[in-house]
Amino acid sequence: MPYVLALASAVVWGSSDFLGGLSSRRAPTLAVFVATQSVGLAVAVGLAGALGGHPSAGDLAFGALGGLLGGVGLFTLYRGLATGPMSVVAPVSAAVAAAVPVAVGLALGERPGALALAGILVALPAIAMIGAGGESAHASAGARPGRAIALRRLPGVAHGLVSGLGFAAFFVFLARTSSGAGLWPLVAAKAASVAEFALLPAARRDLPAVRPVLVPALAAGTLDMAANALYVVAVRASLLSVVPVLASLYPGSTVLLSRAVLGERIRPVQAAGIVLALVAVAMISAR
Image (cartoon, rainbow, N blue to C red):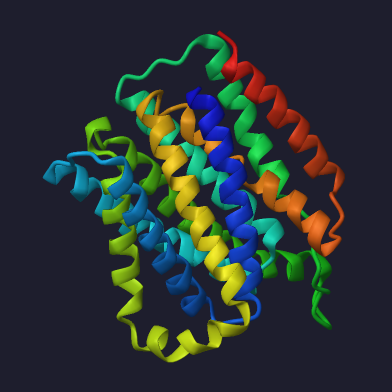
């Protein structure tokens, strides 16, 4: 069951990222981020109140730390998807977000089975392949094509690294919360991520610009919170070295939604990555 929940979180996260990235192309990224996180906070409070729980100070601290760093990761992802090549930002972000928790989990003494560990090794390149796409921009005039493409990719790589490290921190810190805390650590996480950006003057200035994309932005925030909840429940019942890998398959649903809604072509490398991911999931899930 934890693996099913982790995969469900990947599907929901990918859908949220698609809507968030799409909104960020039509409205200021910071305003979209604050809107999505604010609705996520409201949903988190409702879910946590309904499900109950007794969080310790440590649980709330881990949640807040995860929210602060994960918020930076999500904002950077939105910014990267809005301004840079998605074909670079998405796979770098997802691969880093998956690889770091694996290393932390193993360092903490977790020992997945041999087949599950092999599945993790298969999943990491699959994640990068799923997010890989083509270059949409043309080489600048007078520049060598290879150099122009490399220069265009640098901001995407930077956005991907920062966002991936932020997501990895979120994965690790939320995994350290106790089951008895319920979803209250997610309330702390969302409150922290809203606070760190909502107080910026630019956020207050740009927030009215979200109105044209309010529906997809609010949907992105709701789905993001739902994915967070699925992840937290999954990782508390399984291994940190496994669950984030499955959750990091979120570029798959982003790619499929881009194909269905925007008519974007699924490239052969992405199709191969999806197949490889299915193989990895089967290996990790085998007992």
